[in-house]
Image 1: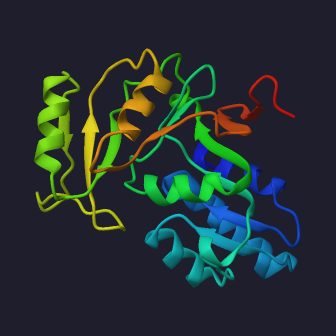
Image 2: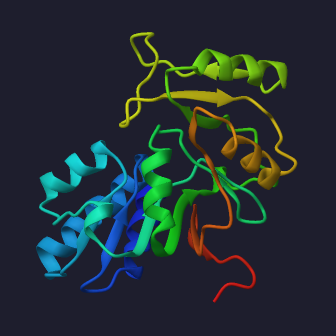
Length: 227
């Protein structure tokens, strides 16, 4: 069993019968969604899934997981998702899979958020992983200009065909190659105020539990001061 599969399965131990579960996106969350399907199929658990991307929706439908959209539920009991970087103070960067907007919406309405990662994603400070910023196409070159002036080293993300990648909401993603983010909250505030920016990949003060895969097994970490 690989580390991603290990933490994906471990995370499902937090799921209880009757829960509404946010189903994350990405290579680690994939294994969690597979296990949720097994729990429903083999152990008879009653679970409603809320997906964070079209890709996860397709996977969940094939597994027979009952689904609702975020607008069809009053809340989500727990969301389990991957992360691209998690700092020592439990702040995160997400969006390497281009699903940051839906992921943040689902996480915002969740009572509990669990991130599942292998140990390579745990870092002292955020920033080595490029920070994704989702922008609407109209005016995107102006945002690129501003990011260049700020020396944020922006790159418009492209797909395998060399075309500008489109998110599930038909937006573009600009990846900021910052190396180190010294003040994530200040940067998040700056990006939040930029016209044309739909969302960014800084997931701050959002996570309740982090499950980290190591060769000797999973470790469950919780930010200090959280219940």
